[in-house]
Image (tube, rainbow, N blue to C red; front, side, top):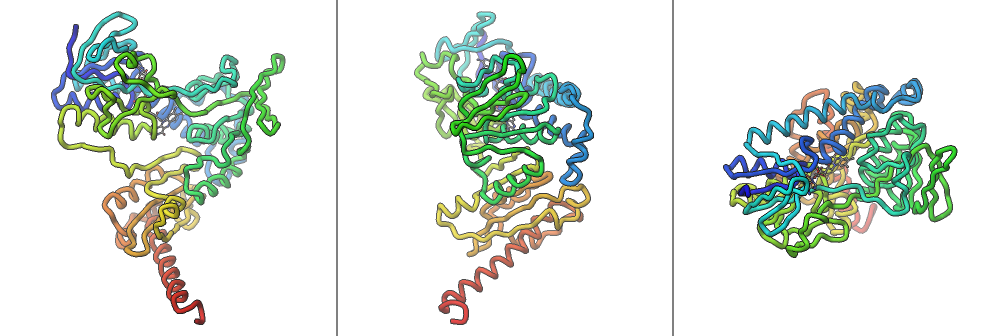
Length: 477
Ligand SMILES: Cc1cc2nc3c(=O)[nH]c(=O)nc-3n(C[C@H](O)[C@H](O)[C@H](O)COP(=O)(O)OP(=O)(O)OC[C@H]3O[C@@H](n4cnc5c(N)ncnc54)[C@H](O)[C@@H]3O)c2cc1C
C-alpha cells in the first residue's frame, strides 16, 4: 500500500491548488481523478472555461457591440453547427489540461486515475483497480454536478443540463432556459447573442436576485436589447416533448406555456460527496451532497479536509482555489495563509458583464450603515466609445463620515477585470480620495473610478447641504 502525506481527491481548482500548495512545501502528495488524463474538473472541462470561451467566440463572430448588434446577428448563416463555435473552446481546454499536467509533474504529484472511495479513516480504494492508498491527510475536492429536478425529462435529446449544453450538435433556433442564477443568465445571454430566440423562466421574481437592485434593474434593461424574454415569478412545473415535431413545451404554475427547440435546465448544483464512503466514518453529506467544514476546511474528522464546490457556497473556481490552499496551509502548519479573504469579487459573464465586491445598497440599508453613491457611465468614457461598449456603469458606495469605500458594483465591458482596482482599494481600507488623487491612463475604462469618485463627492456635498437644511428646520427654515 502506497503511503502519502496527502491524498487529494479531484483535480479541479480546489484539488489542483491544494495539492500544489502541499507539494511545494515538500509533502508527499498523490492526486486521484476519475476522469484522468482529463484534469481540471468542471472549471476546465464543462463549466467555467468552456462557457467563457464560447462567450468570447459568440461576441467575436457576431462582431457584437452594444451598437449594431441586430444587423450582425441577423447576417449569420443558419442553422449553424455548434462545433464551429467550439473550435477555440477545444484549444483552451487542451492548453489548460496541458498546464495542469505540467503543474502536477513539476510538483512531482503522481496522478492516480480512478474513482476514490474511503475504506477507512486513512485509506481509500480506487474502484476501477482495487488499488489501496493510505495518507495522513485527505483533501476532498470532488466538486459538484447539475441538480436535476424530477419533472424535467433529461433523457430526451433536446433537454440539456449545464454540463451537457456545450455538447449540442446544432445551435437551435429557440431555447428555453430554466433558472435565474449565474449559469442560467450567462448561457441565456450567449445564445441570445448568437441570434437564438431565448426565453428564461423561473419561479423567482428577479434574475440574479442577489445583485444590488440598481445593477439588477439596469442589467434586465440590457437583456431586452439582446431580445431575451424573461418569464419570472411563475414556477415552471411541466416539461414535455412532442413525439412528432420534437418541439419542447414548458408550462408554469400559472398555466403559461412556452415552446422551444431545446431546453437548458440550470437549476443549481449538488455536491459530489455522496458515494465516497464517508458516512461509515461519521462524515455525513447533507441532502444536496455537500460537506460541512469548519473555518479551516476540516470535516468532522480533522485530518479529512474538504474544499471547493463540495462545501457549497459560494461555488466559484476563484474561491475554490483559495480554499484548497488555505486548507493545506492549515493541515501542514504552513503559517502564512490562514483564511480565504472574505472580500472576494463576483464576476458574472453575461452580456454585458457584471461584477461587484463589497456591500450593495440593500445590504447597507439592512445593516443601518449610512452611505453615499457615486456613479460613472460608460457613455461618458472615451475608451468605451472607442470599443463600442457604451452600455454600462460603475458605482462606488462609500461612507459619508470618512469617505471609506464600502462596495463597488459595475456593468459593462471588462468589468470583471476592472473590479479588481476597487477590490484592492477596499482591501486597503481606502477612501474615494484615492481615485481622485490617482492619475489613470487615458483613454481607459479604469478612469470610471475617478469620475465615479467625483460624482460621489458631489453627492456627498448635496447630502451635507440637505442635512444642514434639515437641522435648521428645512429649506428656508
Ligand atoms: C457553466 C459554469 C460556468 C462557471 N463559470 C464560473 C466562472 O466564471 N467563474 C468562477 O469562478 N466559477 C465558475 N463556475 C464554477 C466553477 O466551475 C466551480 O466552482 C469549480 O470548478 C469548483 O471546483 P472544484 O475543484 O470544487 O470542483 P470541480 O472543478 O468540479 O472538480 C472536481 C473533480 O473531482 C473529480 N471527482 C469527483 N468525484 C471523484 C472521486 N470519487 N474520485 C476521483 N475524482 C473525483 C471530478 O471528476 C472533477 O474532476 C462555473 C461553473 C459552471 C458549471
